[in-house]
Image (cartoon, rainbow, N blue to C red):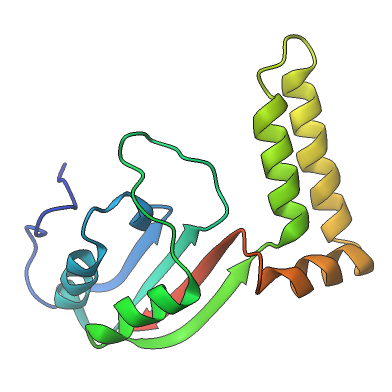
Length: 153
């Protein structure tokens, strides 16, 4: 079934146990309406699992509308009645810097794609080290790459 989720969902009340929303919320014109719809279609005890970007390039133009702080996510979820089970930043400064550099060099003739992949790989290796992991984690609250969230009805 194809449906524009900027509109009411053609689904029954309390029909689902889980809603998965991955890198979608930033593309919704009226996100509070979608939060209400998710609440409506979930059974009691049902969960929404979602992630959203924060420091990220404009994508899927012209349908890239929002970037959310943890405070906006908390507000939208609790305003419709969800209980927050988990809300945490994903990535931090190292991941953001690597992403910005990689996205800006990927189109360089001959070396861009390979160099962009190398930068992303090297950053992933770095943040798996003790010092890299601490740096990423300590910077994530102020400079989140995105957020991961689980809420329950």
